[in-house]
Image (cartoon, rainbow, N blue to C red; front, side):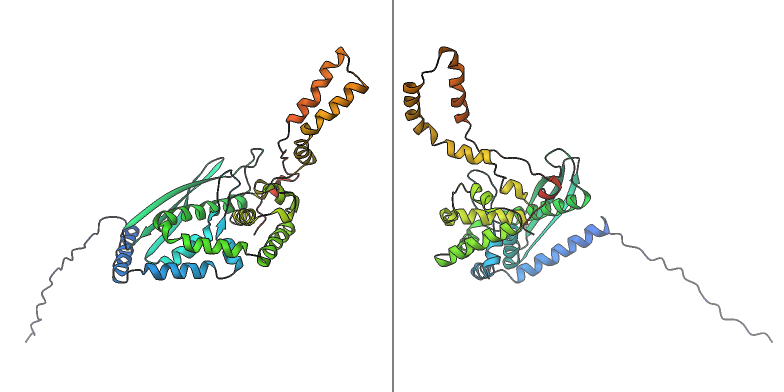
Length: 318
């Protein structure tokens, strides 16, 4: 007697695979942004609290206040908010994301792009920045210096995009408070002035170069606006936006003589009258008389290149 084996039915199951359109990285990024927008809508920012927190952080101490200001040595360029101030504003504002990346490089420039997006108001802005990666003689920077310059370009691109998204009206009070603390009043002003000059002096920038940059003769002639300009230049150097020799150009004896010669034409008339009485010039000496007048015209300060290009093209306020 044989036992019958039970028959087993085999059913083939076909599982459908759902394919999402687009690269996985892009889909993940999109999901992240959508989640962040939903959170921002659920917890909206308080503008009054933002302005209060921004002022508190920008004026936390004197060093923080100084780092919030930067200046470029251009005529008519006032002191403005720095990269550090942008970072503080971004933290306090909330419901906003920002990023920056290097997007290209060629023989003479490195290119960066910054992006800032306000998740609550659905506002975004991109900003592109380029920075030179060649020395004054046309040679390219080394690999390390190119990397530092690229990071500086990213920081500037991010700063510019952040200040395009966060309204400037929200920043003014905190920035003015930071400027006031950085400069100081009364005894604080004198102490801050001496502290800034000593710091620059330790880093190889002489006081004569600093005074020449603000067109002053002595340290006591430095005004609060001048000190704010000097602090801003120091911040620009530390954030790799400008080289030290461009912020505070070298001063030569010819440049100092040129400044002194601006007063000579007023006294020259008396000297001429005396020379006519004592020694009248001959007709052949007419050409020699015109030479001193041509020398008096050149009163513009002379800027010389640094002696060691490898050292002075670096940034001294690190």
